[in-house]
Image (tube, rainbow, N blue to C red; front, side, top):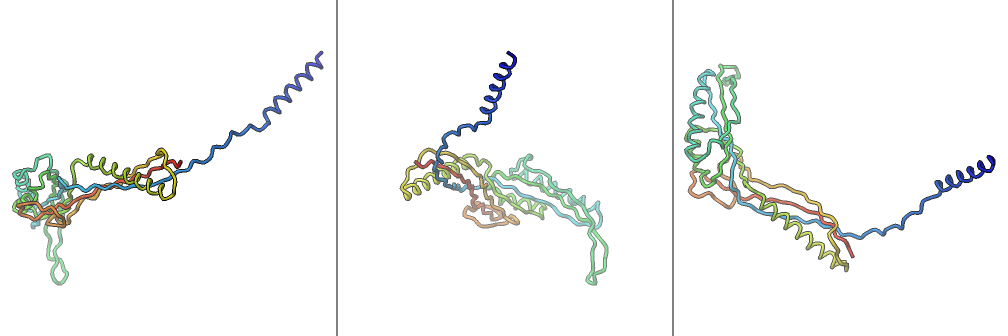
Length: 242
């Protein structure tokens, strides 16, 4: 009896092993789906409505105390002048205060002594560009002798970004339709979309006094040209080909 049970058990084990070793039936392969990939670009031009500027006072005197004293006086006068032209206190930020000793040299290359130089620079946010030229003129009159890196920008670019994205998708769809028609095929549903924000190009003016562009600030003591800036985005869209 035990012998028969053992033989039956052995056959069952062999059946299980054979079943486990048998190759699985592969599902029917799905044919590769045909697709068309196109790219579209959207661009929107904007008129700047805000500017960022570095304005500073540089002084040099025989002693550090004299140089700091004069610089403090001129810088305070500068800040008061900026506020009087409409710049809010929150838009005036000290970015640098430094002092160092300058060695003076004669024509023969030998040292003739030294003085002390002091720099105090503030970073301005100007929200009224129509007043920008007058502001710069007032800053110079108040003692500013270091004005640089004027950067024009747009405070709120969200609407322009949406317009640029919509234009990019529209361009991609137009290109896809033209390519499909030329190839004699029909487009199906959109299968994929990838988006890339190429950023925007603000205008930089080296010393802030002038520059190229179309929109001149009227009645400005210092000629200022805001020009334009451009936002660019791109999309890549994948279409099914029927």
